[in-house]
Length: 503
Image (cartoon, rainbow, N blue to C red):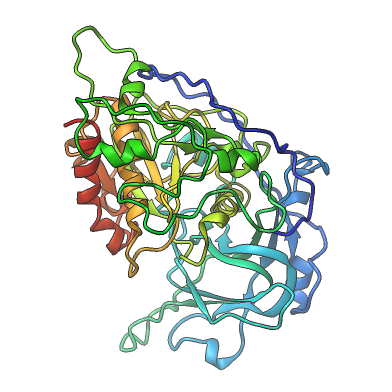
């Protein structure tokens, strides 16, 4: 990444964290504080473009006093550019309203894009495409599709997060890499050509292009974030490369199932490579160590998988001043919903922390959420990251599956997996994470559970729905998420997760 501002995350040696691993007790949600984002009159970012776009461009950091950063705080910024009608005939669709967008223009450096609009419940019926120019070059990308999203990942209707904030409609964010030029077009759906009396499809009001710069993360000085790439020939079941310096691994307990052999071989107290870069990691534990750390009732037979290593929010450089101060909890974790981030697959695992910081800023600053939406994230190399704040062992209320956020957790696999197979390491990481986290709450990954819908486009509010304990996003909402290819791997994830629990 570019060295734009000084990060506040010091380069210190990572140490093992002392975390409460007893079976979590029910916690009442903490109260939310309202945090609206009023309009800004700050000047546009430099660059060519139509006067309407230039005059209306804003920087989200200038919106409120709480957004003002000192030089000692983490870097990162969001440019917000209003879309305007595109008059060119080629950008019009017969029988539909005029397309909107922005012609090619310069911008301050950014790495992730998305489109937002005023009404969070308004749906965008159409296509969104962007082109970007790599920073410092004249090279423009091909047109890339942005998933329109349409409110499927969000806080539940009627929730404090939904009602107490200025929440916006939003597309999925798209990772485009280090860029300084952009062009966007939003084309509405065409009506049936035979229905000549039909009213043209309206686009949502107040559409804006969001250009997100993730800023620098812990120990970054040239775009090299800290998550390791997988080693060539790494054995099946390992989440990522094991760099030199890993601590000695305790011997495998004789009672553990055979599938754990490779998993425990990859576990360690601290990832030395991350430690050297100042990142913080929750260390992996063997199953025996995990069970020792959990308080169980006398005679109870535990089914808890070994705790995987988890890169904390500090480890991926989350700016804790962006999110709401308080945490929100539900009573338990009954199920896990698997998602893909739909941010595209053009990232390296070393860039994953930057992708996470960008999504975090897009969720909070652009979409108006209280925090990062997902409880956990997994990159293509199988590295696991803490998502929404509140404690990795606790039942943290997320904003990942509209209608089913209560008593569930959301896991986002970074990438787009509609037509691309998810890496085996990522699927393995989902198995490891669910074996541990669902095990803390007594859930069988191969089992079924009944959830009550909070209202979605698939199930009305109050409807009881029987689902797999490990489900895909599409099981609770009419959506393509987590992508057809990733969805097909969930059966394998359930089986592997259960084996890791010793079932």
